[in-house]
Amino acid sequence: MAEITAALVKDLREKSGAGMMDCKKALQENNGDVEASMDWLRTKGLAKAAKKADRAAAEGLVAGKISADGKTGVLVEFNAETDFVAKNDSFQNAARDFANVALATDGSVDAIVAGKTAKGELVSDVVTNLIATIGENMRVRRSVKLAVDQGAVAIYLHNKQGDDVARLAVLVALEGAGDQAQLAEVARRIALHVAGTPTPPLALNSDELDPEVVAKEREIQTQMAVESGKPREIAEKMVEGRIRKWQEEVVLLKQPFVMNPDQTIEQLIAETGKELGSPVTLKAFARFALGEGVEKKTDDFAAEVAQLSGQS
Image (tube, rainbow, N blue to C red; front, top):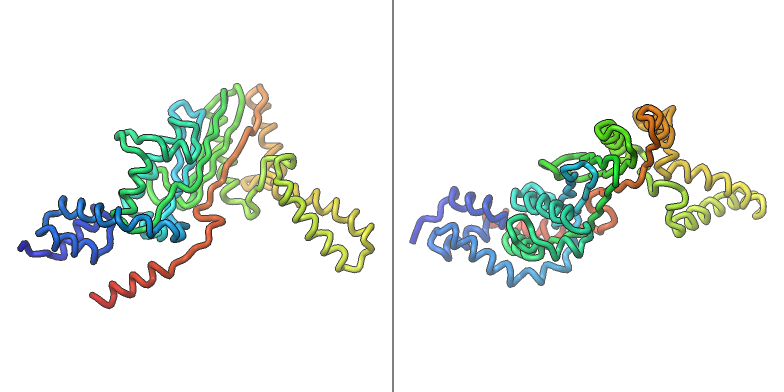
C-alpha cells in the first residue's frame, strides 16, 4: 500500500476542498491515487448531500459581472455554510461561472440553476458535485440582472475575495444617450455610495418602497408620538412629517451623496445630464450583502473542528 503522506493529503484537500480526515481516508481507500480519491469523495458526498440540505448556508460569495458592451450587469449570491469555503478556488470559480450563466439567461435563479456553464456543465450538477467534495450545504440563493438600452451599468465590489467575487456587491443602471464612459463612472460612484452609506437605501424612490415597510414605520412613529404624551390626532399629524423625513433617508434619489453630502443623488443625476447635454435617468440599483436575512448557524462546523483537533 502506498504511503499516505501529509503532502499527499494536502494536495487532495486543495483540489477537492474536502475535510482533512476525509481526504486521508479517501487516499487510504484508493492506494494513494489522487484522481481515484477525488472520484471516491464525490461518490461518498453524493450519498450525503441530501442530509446537508437543511443546514443553514449563510456564507459564501456574491459574484458580479458586466457585459462586454457595458449595458447589462448581474449579481449572483452563491452560499455555503462557512466562510472558509469561500476561499476555495473551486467554489470561487463556480460563482464566477454562475454569473456568466446569469448574463446569458434572464438572470433568474431558476434560469441559472437550469443553465449550463461555458464548459457545458449543468449548474445544478456543479452545485451537487461541490456539495459532494467540500461537504457543506450550498445553494444559488438569489440573483438580479439590470440592463439599459442606452447608457451604462456599473458594479462596485466591497470586501473582495477574488476577481469578480465579494461579500457585498452593488449594481447601478444609468439610462442616457451621453458618453458611456462618463455614465459608467457616475454609475460606479453611485454604486460605491449604496455600498458605503450608513443607511442602505430600501428603494429607488418613495413609490417603490414596500407598503408593508412603510406601514410598519408609520406604526412605530405613531406609537412614539402617542407615548410622548401627544393626543392621538396631533400625533398622527406629526407622524406624516416624520414619515416624509424617513423616506428621504431610505430612498436612494433623496440621499446625500457620500462623496459630496451637500448634493443628493437626484441632484448628481441632474448635474450629469447637464454636463452630457442629454437627460440621464437612474433606472435601477441592486445591493446584495452576503447572507443578509439568513439565520447563521456554526454549531456543525465547530463540532467538526473539535473532532479534527482531537484526532490530530
